[in-house]
Length: 486
Image (cartoon, rainbow, N blue to C red):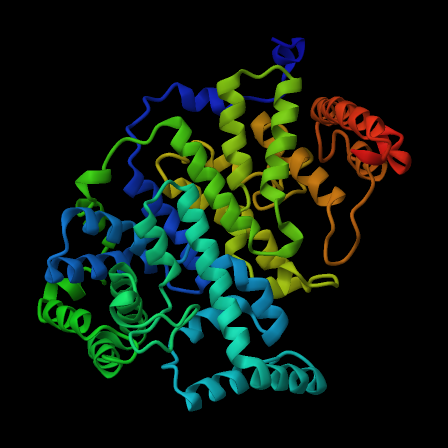
């Protein structure tokens, strides 16, 4: 073990959590809790995915699906919006609109031409100048079909790809990919029709619309919407199954109570197994993909922060298990950013005071989301403290060196280094020297000297083999020094 390990500052949150007995971790509970993060970026009331799972499982039972089909349906419903963050930046750019509000309201239009036109006029460029708004509106009116198809295609394929990384079956992946296909063939992204659409998708789309309209107008509005789209959007057999479910008051009661325990009780026996550490790592990495897809300026941010945090942890001599724990915190530290509009995240200028309030809230959102997840509850306070400083001038709680676990200090240093060394909407990426200069200028105030030095040492070690390889290939002319390349 490295000699640094005996002189680490503060206290170890990891060590404190190791003393508690570890409860068995089950997939349905982990994903049910994490689905709340997806709901935020979709602009839906908390628990939307969980409620959809409750509705969809009732429909599946009415349809007499087999046990394997019900297991796949369960996870399709919970994870239907896995790809939702991937089109957020483009929605902002095209519609000059808040992506979260846009997505919330978009789910309520019925697909008719009049509704679509009204939506475009009401939502496009409300906070932009007249000329910008006119240009954006004309672009959407001229290219609306292609734009809509591309947005949904990105979302659906990204969701299916992440589902594959989370080890879900091909049927679950297809169920997520085809969520926006319509019975009459006028859906997206492929225009598939009728029974060629996955039955999981057909049920999930109905369940989604039921919850959206129930939250907005109650059971009567919800039933009317489903009935009105039978044979166009929806499979008539699925609509009839829903209507039979709607006659049972327990369906609606389940939507106005704490729905999570209800769906956990419905967890498929085929997949109600305990989650091991390797699978937990896959889940953390899958949701890091959801987080990083939110903005082109944070693409791979979570993975790079994870690399830097692990580098620091290795340099100060932490154990393999301790480093694995920190890597999970790093992968998920920005999950709260799913609640922040891309109009703010991708803004080229300085945020307004109101926008800063939203930005500064994201670590608290991260902590609250992770605290819901039994598997990640132990990392929640560390992930939630990645913008704290040693001098108490950080956010959201203004913690100081005396109250911060050293794992949070590691994460904060890794996060700031990546923010400085990557492109941002308001500036280009800084060089290694410039980024490290800023870190060193705030030693003892924002960052602990031990961890800044550990990062520098790790980057030097990482850069050595890279430079040797570039030199051997005779392509390293402009990267001749470690400082210019790390």
